[in-house]
Image (cartoon, rainbow, N blue to C red; front, side, top):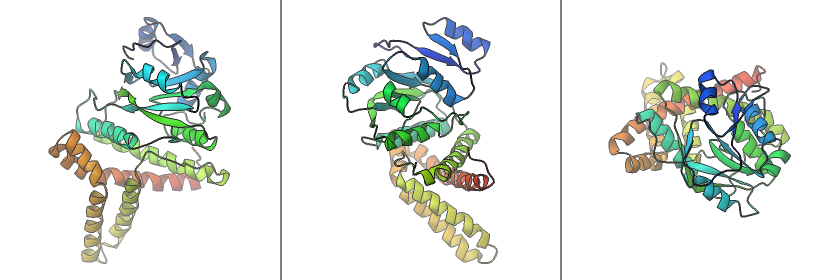
Length: 304
């Protein structure tokens, strides 16, 4: 977990289908291990929050390592009574050094570092909130059993209730999660499905995502990739025009995301940024495919 200099009042570890090895490891530390009466990531977080005795809840995923001063920064930030909670930011460091793990880690850091105050997001890898706000907002939607957009949905509820959540850039953490080509594309595909279903499910009740960590230029890129997908259908009839249109749109996608590519060149290497430029259109393609799948499955009756 960490070598924190600031000791919390209590540490609750929710057992949500832990194996015997995990239970044995947990027993060697001063933590309160509680069995989740239900199953799923959302219900596990709600259960831990409900039995917590403190006035501030701090959510940390099991694959997250926080810095030694992170809790101190949270404590200092929440002295501001107008602040309802904070979210931490992923550090540059990640122990897994393959391309896809580093790419994803930078993406999460890059998208959150650009945010300002009152972000209406609750990134639960490392996020704190006053318990009173958590309770009045109803907690996480327990229809989400696997990690999905349950934190996005909860963040939107906080925004509707005017509960201010700020990014706390000093509170950095390492998300020790390894990605491969398959897993990163699968993650982005599934998240897009869930996000579209969420938007379609809530728009009538005006519970919309007022803010997001995803840059607008990435959204523009997704729209352009959708046009590329439609253009592929026209290639047999108009091969020259369609191919030229596809090539131009791919070039525009790279130009639109130029700041992201430049960020990677600066923080990793030019070689890394070139690989990213090649991978980016593929990733966007899977995002768009997920959005389309989310729409179709929602229409067929699947809401989550």
